[in-house]
Length: 552
Image 1 (cartoon, rainbow, N blue to C red):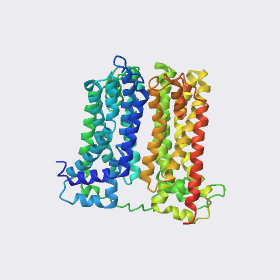
Image 2 (cartoon, helix red, strand yellow; image 1 turned 120 degrees about the vertical axis):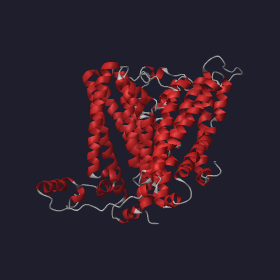
Image 3 (spheres, rainbow, N blue to C red; image 1 turned 180 degrees about the vertical axis):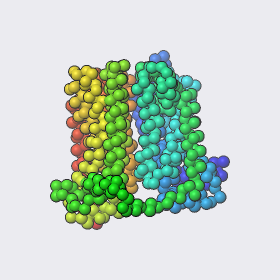
Image 4 (spheres, rainbow, N blue to C red; image 1 turned 120 degrees about the horizontal axis):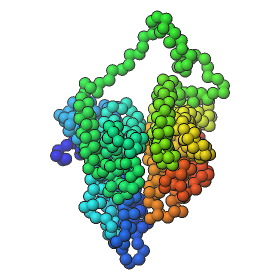
């Protein structure tokens, strides 16, 4: 069946011939082998009795899961939307190939390629088995089943989002949003409810089955990390939930693969007339607040490039900003209730960790999608040539684009403050710690914006810039937490503390005395290091922007 599907053959061969596949293979092999070499015994005796191999197998399993989340969804998220924008999807749907065979070819090609990438970690897994402490039936085989379920599920998510998106960068952005919601945010209701009983507690337990974290904890024997949350799901529950999600998304995607359903009418616009006194009053109010309706010139003190970004960018228009404000208000209320109930139930230290991680997830969702569009979208659409022809110097162009993202990120950050206000009210002695946490979050915002904008300056397409930005930022913020997860063995306390200094979110966790982070003293050195990374990226971005504005 694999050889008879032309879509599968075309997709798989084109991916295997790409240099990106080779780079991904080398990355997976290098990281997995490095984790084993750090713990490989130096004497002639192999640790058979102790849990030395498990201490290496645990971060290896989490690193492979992170690699699946970062690498697998990228291609299916851009597959169908690229086909539709180039016009080849209509040819495929009018060919003898059925919608099911088209979907199967794209899904199977991505699953097979992901399995090829995972085989690069087999030497590291075999080395863990040689060290003793893990077995094929209890550890290796369950981890392989878990990885396969994650690959199939995330591939189905990418194809489902890709068919409903209008551009490649939007498809990538929403695909990672859905995956983050399935992997991390699905545990939010259980964190909120805690160990309470009832219908809502049962629903919260079912939602945790969507996340592979509990299954990973079960396979690696580290259930104590989530025991306080009351998580009772494991590998079987995740496989069932993953199969249900994959099958549902497959049915929705195949049903949508119809030429008639994919035809989208062009917007005809709105007819504005004299619709009465109420509509006239509404138009006058819209005239006052909507930048698109004002005919006055831009003030001298306002950067016109920033105004251009807000007026032309989808998430910069007034109605999207109002929606963002409303969403932030809702998140603020939820975080306030979350902090109040959780602090009373569990204490400040236990509730601060999930609160900081939720804020980090919110910044990683919004920041790269905005910063990666700054220069790459202009180069891709041809608008950069128009900016080069304007009398604005490179510094004014760059500052206007950066400020359009910074103001939006600050608006998102404001949604995280009420939760800390509640904790400060409940425990006034934490006011200084809350201030340090806010500084850490501001440093994290600076790193997210500067890194994503720097990546955007070196990419010619928005899709590549968005995927690369997510990869680099996940490596900085999530990869450092993987090192913390392997603290003790193979990583010593000094190395873990130095690595955590690269992550301002870890500094926020240490300031709130989150369990596992209270022994590290990360502030203010983490602020200076994060600020240095942001400043270095801004310097590189400025030089790159100056080069891009020079005559050809």
